[in-house]
Image (tube, rainbow, N blue to C red; front, side, top):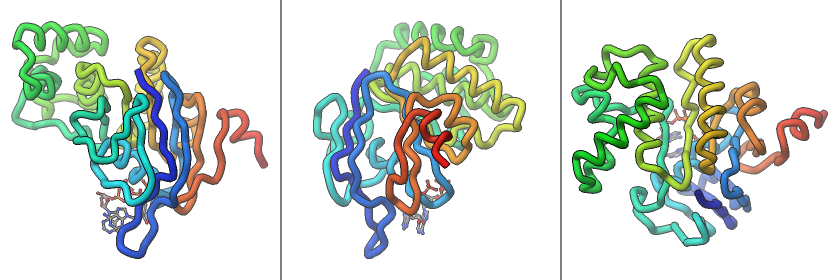
Length: 225
Ligand code: ADP
Ligand code: ADP
């Protein structure tokens, strides 16, 4: 677990400002939701934390260490994408263990870790299957499992439930909540869905046009007229 500190962090594409330099301190173990309409800068902010997008201004600290130029895989973060981003020709087990294999972790240790996480997520019986033969909810569990096996300091979620149907979205939302209660890993979660924000967040950051419009607990954000 680690805190994440954005100090005057901003992003421009040429002359166009996607995220205005802003300050935000995300506490150790906090579940922080970035909420706002399409195009307000949520994804860009998340991708800057992940290292998938360079930072134009300011400093990003994770666990007190400056990360601006640190390679994404060395930041202690794991990201879960909206479209799952699974390898179609690899099995669930291989997908989940991929990052550990790249880190040259011994095979037996990878298997053990993947098995433990698969058990936690109800994926044990699907380990030999390919993603294409799974339901949307199962695929999203694999994507989440792939992030968990890396035991990151920080989870980054980019609209992870938005491709699921309404019923499954509710179920997965509850599962994510339980997972956070259980693991307590610092999480930054991007969504435009107010209900998701309300139920998952310790704290909500409302973004609008590349700036922070409001910060507060779900209650504070929703009680504001
Ligand atoms: P959100 O995640 O809230 O939908 P984004 O962070 O994706 O918003 O985008 C914020 C703004 O930055 C938008 O105006 C978008 O068009 C712009 N933007 C994002 N990525 C790029 C890019 N690679 N080049 C130019 N503009 C971009
Ligand atoms: P999101 O679902 O996060 O809003 P988008 O569909 O807006 O994502 O963007 C998808 C991809 O296109 C991202 O990699 C983003 O950086 C890029 N992008 C978004 N807006 C622009 C833009 N105006 N010019 C160039 N690239 C963009």
